[in-house]
Image (cartoon, rainbow, N blue to C red; front, side):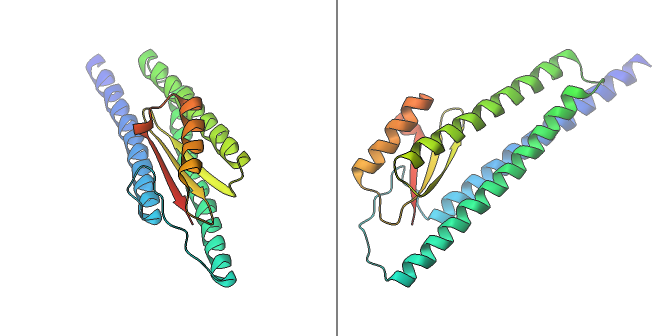
Length: 180
């Protein structure tokens, strides 16, 4: 009888682990789509400014705005699911001490990441950018900036400095992409 109880507990831990891996994979897919939508693969993408008519500029601005809104909606939904999984583990009477500790640590790490992303987005917007999205992982940070014109070297350096100062991530781990 004890053998069966242990087997059930291990199976449950595996399902929880698989669920968290699934959420992590979903985050990776969203990140890949984000990179594909911007069409950039370079860590810092600098393009010469192109002239646009007023109508083209408004369409570009609306598209960029929709992109940022849609991404935030997807990110929030993904985070809500992940937090829900972690809360289930934490509140379950069947969770052992190790699983409970891991879930609490993951929840704290997620909260810290969310806080850093919000802080960085606010600091970058304070520098005059219309909108931006920041994703923070353990050793990398992705920044997508809504900028009507191509980023200059000075602008990219300014964003890089903010990210490096607040996260401690090296320059090689920071990717800045304009969304114009």
